[in-house]
Amino acid sequence: MHLRGKVVYDVGAFHGLLTIYCARVARAVVAWEPNGRNRQRLVENVLLNRFSNVTVRPYGLSSKSARAEMRFDPLMPGMASLDFGVAAGVEHENVELRTLDSEEGIEPPDLIKIDVEGFELEVLEGATTTLRTGPDLYLEMHGADAEDKRRRVLAITDHLWKVGYRRILHVETASYITPENPETAAQGHLYARRA
Image 1 (cartoon, rainbow, N blue to C red):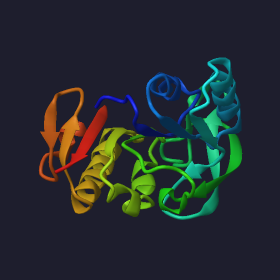
Image 2: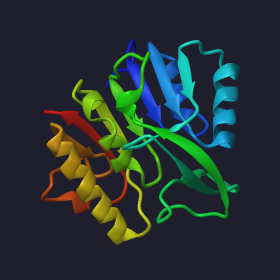
Image 3: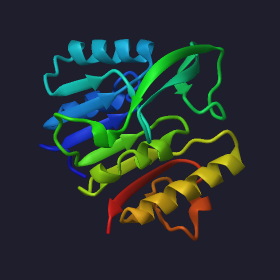
């Protein structure tokens, strides 16, 4: 997808690598990062690059509005997770969660990137109305072990098919994923488009 003039949602923005990459050409980038330390670095990076087309949201996304405990290892800040099966580390932070469908005042997305360390399905379940607008999706697959990753990718694939996404590409193998062959995508990234 060419990003020039597009609207990009960066869910799980971390320090903003993808946010900054997209902001160079996109019309607007909305970045969600609930982890306070990561969000501070994200905001610093946006300011350093003088982007005026980036909005940073200080909470996470899920299937429902709530408060949750995020665990992380300060030596591995990119691995912070709300899913204790995936999370590693002894530090924690209480974070706010909202649904993507409840977000107001932002343009509909052309592309949504989701990298939330095992919480991908919950984000998708809270975005049903948003997904009806047909944005492309880029998802990173996570899990505690190989079996957990297979289970998660099956649930994600089933959900995407239910909401109309039929072109689900496993990026690393360049193969298309269906509910019948999700094990192919148990590791890596998915790029999904509506049929």
